[in-house]
Structures are given as C-alpha cells and as structure tokens.
Length: 147
Image (cartoon, rainbow, N blue to C red; front, top):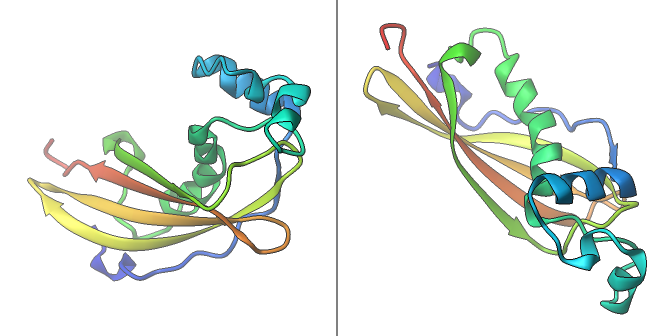
C-alpha cells in the first residue's frame, strides 16, 4: 500500500440523480418493505418530497468515489485482493428521489494488517445546493501478494 494516499482527496464525482425507480429497486433488493421507500404518498405523509431511499442507498454514490481510489495508479490496491470489510453512514438527512448527489472521497487512514493493509476512506455526499447529506465511511481490506 502506498502510505502517501493518507489525506488524499479525490475530485467530486459527476452529479448522480436519484431516480424513483432506482430507489424502489434498491429497496426490493435489500428487503426494505416500509412504504416510504416505494409509495410517494406514504413518503409525503411523513413530510418528504418523494420516496425515501433506504439508508444503505448511499453506497450507490460512495461506489462512484471508491472507483476513483481503485483506479489510482501506484496505490497498491489490487481489486482481486480487496474485500469490503466495514461500512458506516452518518446522515444529516435522508436521501430522497429527485436528489442530485455528488461524492468526494478522502483517504483517512492506512493500517498494516498481516501482509496487507486496511484502508479507511470517507465519502462526503452533498446535494445540488452543496448541503451535506451523508458521510459514508468504508474500510477496505487489501491482501498482500502472498495471501
């Protein structure tokens, strides 16, 4: 692993428009059955402009940021030896269909682990008004060459 990645910030991703059908598909995939995830009227009754994405939906946008890290030349990260070890979300507000979200990744730590390393990163996800929506923290376990 390249220790110089710590503190590295990547450029913002292209805006991602959260579609109603994408939220519904994601909700079905993760077995989120609450009507706020599929029915606009149920979501509006709770005070939202449209259907609400399940909390782990932020991973869709975070993945765009992680792709930047994985593609970084000289990072020492080899996809075939990478396992997504941990995931956390810290929300300011829920993601709602119609949101236009942008992610910006920062590598916050690299810790040796056996012959490999654990890489921690944070994706700050903001809306079209540049207001914070969620911080998605991810830990990748990168195996060494002999593992």
